[in-house]
Length: 243
Image (cartoon, rainbow, N blue to C red; front, side, top):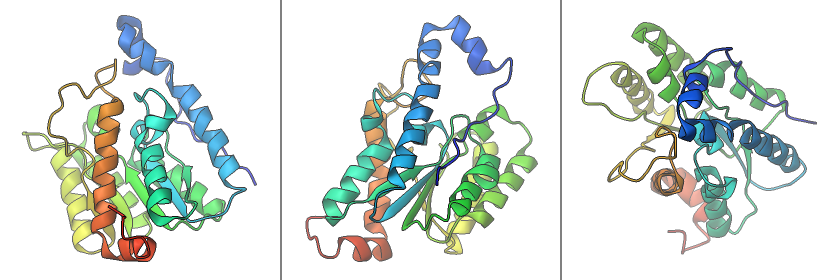
């Protein structure tokens, strides 16, 4: 069994490609997108041959680790190491995210890939929504896509809020939908973007997180896992040093 690589369709002209012409920093980060996707493609298919508790990571370029210096400094790799060290078990991760991913990509591509490959995850996480906020204008359609994804996420999935804004708008629409789902106990909400400061936290393109920020993202997800009684007691009860 081989997991089919997931990619968003690239447009002939996009803001990212235009930015890459105008900015060396954007061009440098853009050049890492396909190699990083290929890294996770290879990783995913090697993981299929292994045994151990399974984590399925969904989302966009943040879950790909774009902006980190290496895959090892992405939040996915950091959390995987912590899961293994704290539980004493050989946790595995299948990373089904895609750069540029939006809510509809989780619903229409990532979750179907999980089901089609008969993956039975012990943990599902998703960081998604930034591209819907940045590149789409119609709040009603964004809310519809967010709601469809929420309805399709497996129960007990850990989902990050989108970053906050002082202005009420698309971010508020999304976070309100997420909060309602969390209140109904369908998903577990955390905030990947709960950073003390944004200063010094961005990669060369000034859009993606850098290594320092990815560690903060990992810390925020890790805290959410530790604070969830069901998850903590199931996986860390026999290891009193889990923190």
